Each structure stands twice: as structure tokens, then as C-alpha cells.
Amino acid sequence: LVAANLVLANEGVLDGFGHVSMRHPENPERYLISRSTAPASVTRDGLVECTLDSEMVDPNAPASYLERYIHGAIYKARPDVNCVVHSHSPTVIPFANSKTPLRAMGHVSGFLAGHVPVFDIKDQFGPTDMLVKNNDHGDALAQCLGDRPVALMRGHGNVVTGPSIQISVHRAIYTEVSARQQLQAQALEGPITYIDEAEGEQCNEMIAATSERPWKLWKKKVGMG
Image 1 (spheres, helix red, strand yellow):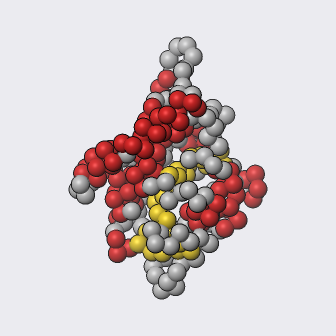
Image 2 (spheres, rainbow, N blue to C red; image 1 turned 60 degrees about the vertical axis):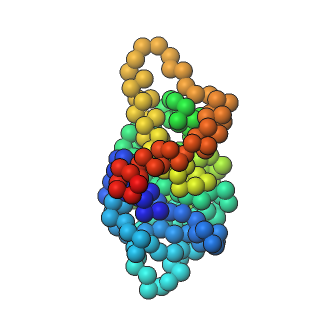
């Protein structure tokens, strides 16, 4: 979990904001997340344990992120998810704020093939500061995510899920990469040929089988390899 924070900060997906969590490996009704700090500053000693209602298990633990409700709600709704990443990935936000859907550009972003939902907090809660600050907000986001791996958040960022830390980190990085490639392709003449859903399913199987390879590289780049 510490490595995931450092890797995503180093790869430009997380900056001073955003967070990563993992379902507790011994208790699926709890999850682990960092105390409230910049992702590049996360340490093992700063990890805290939360219930799926995002209450701190230890009331004396340091305060975690205000938006930890994102994580608890998704773990509650999705037993298949073991890692959640919330970021303000810069190239993704234009797709969250426009009518242009985010699509899968290459095989490493095959998880984006098909529908990528967009969560607009205003639809249910009216004008807000865009933050997911309680269980009602978190549940609404989880419902919008459905069974998809990624959901965009209008005016905010995105949430990425996966069955493991390695795959969730891969998806968070390649959501940003694919968004950048899509913007580049849209500047060229002619129609764009995206990865379709059937291709995406096979690409996902390939990535699941090889996820350790980029993970080891990314960890090495932050001195944890």
C-alpha cells in the first residue's frame, strides 16, 4: 500500500491530493488507508484501519482523508474489489466534464473498453464542494460505478478499482495514459479505432497474467524494488 502511493505519485497520477486503500487481508469488513497526508509522504507507520462505513477502528488513530467514504462504500458494494485509487489525474478531468466518453486506446488500457460511467454529485445532492464526504455520497458514487473498473467524477477526478494493488495501480496509470492518447488522436484526421469490448476482455486477461512486471519496474523507480 505504501509502494502504491509512492508509485502513483511518481507516475504523475497522484499529486498533493488523492489516496489509495486496500481491503484488509485478514478482515474483508475493514480496509487500510493512510492518515491524511500527501501520497508521496505515506509511510507504513501512518496507515490506519477503517470499517466499511469508514469509521476509524482506533478512535485515537491519526485522522485519515476526508474522502475515505469513497473507499468504504466501494468495498461494501463490490466484494470483488481489493484496492481503490482516487485521483485527480489531470488528463482525465476533461472527459469527466465533457460529453466525449473516455475510451480504450491500447491493449494496456483494455479495461476502459465499453462504458466508463461519469458520477456527477450535483445530480443527487445539489451544489457541493465536489467532495465525497459521507456515506450517502460514497454510496451514490459506488452505485454509479456499478460493476465497472473505473468511474469519472465530474469536476473532480476519477476512481479506479481492481482485484489487487498491482492491477489497480496499473489501471490508474493507464487511465491517465489512455486519456492523453485519446486527446492526441482526436487532433488527427479521420475516425479513431478504439479497443472494443471483446478485445478489452482478452487484453484484461493478458494484463492480469503479467501485472507483476510493470509493478516491479514502478517500485524500483521509487527505491522499493
